[in-house]
Image 1 (cartoon, rainbow, N blue to C red):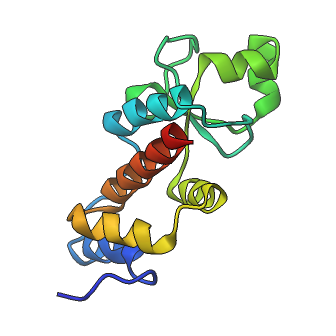
Image 2 (tube, helix red, strand yellow):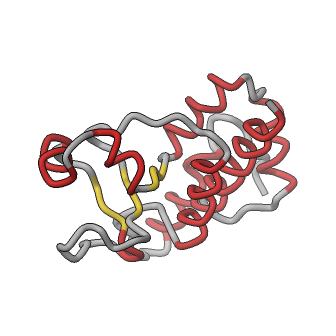
Length: 148
């Protein structure tokens, strides 16, 4: 077994997927991420809806069916959301942001969560996928927000 390092942690499951010729899911989020993202929001995570963000619509406010599971949508055009829901504040209120792995690492940096702690938590959680790593990051952010 290869030791996990900052260079190979985020890519380990991609190699396995392609080696085993498995289908790659179109988005890295599951229902557990949605629930954790709600806790992130309730814990005070600041968010400005932007193009390139994934959002969860738990209250079924978006009438069109999502192409993704669990009523997850991709923000391709923020102006479209503002047009439908009146303003950016309403968009922020109605929807739950699902930070990507990349966004989550940026949030960890901004909150001062040490890289060593991140890697320690990922290793001790015995994660099997990047999706599991993302859950670890969400939990670290929740802990930090609730301790501030």
